[in-house]
Length: 275
Image 1 (cartoon, helix red, strand yellow):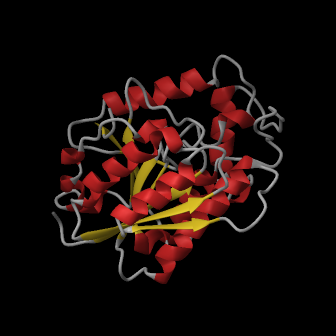
Image 2: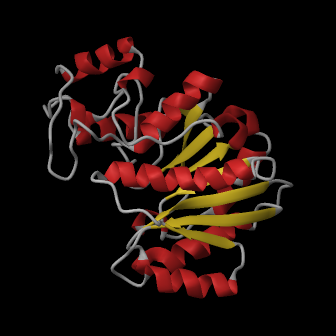
Image 3: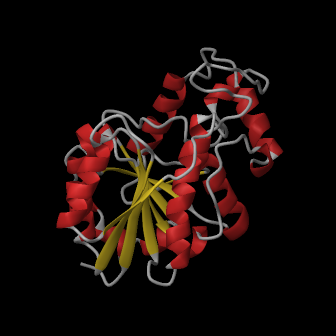
């Protein structure tokens, strides 16, 4: 156990099948800290998510969850950003209490078995190697939408889906990078989430999530590098489930903002936390 307190948070909607296992994993993470809180922002669900939250809160008073009082936005990424920002508001009000916070998803990605034994070193001898830290997944790194890593600096949805730019190419690129890192090193990037990320609060407390396209946060030479490797101009496309004119992954703006404001080190560990 370390001497720090941590706030573990995230949005929840229709997470009933996974919720109890995720909360069990959170308890294991929390045991590494002097104390911890769980902060959840709940959107109206069609399953038993709310019932499970109420029942769990009776057993564990560390859980605080907030019900969204507002109608949902038109676009999914805007709703998720709003939920994550509400979690951040709680952290801001208590920023001197939590030197670290964890933002995570409460779905199938994090309801696997957790290997908490890999975490302590990142709060001791490797504490200065990162400001935001996410982890690899097996068999490959999966969250390509939230990933920005040179030369793939923006969303693959905003370039032609050709053979040099599709999801699999970028997934193989980052997975190979992680698998071939020298022992003990972390992979630097512009943005990474992969369902779970730890943050140093002081570096991110004045940033916010944004589900809109934020080209102003990505240097033009980075966009040109992505365009070159993708062999495509930047494009706007409505995929149905994602409207490229109005939506981008909310994590990209959050991480890019922290790089701009506080020169934050966004890193990926090659270790697998959930398996």
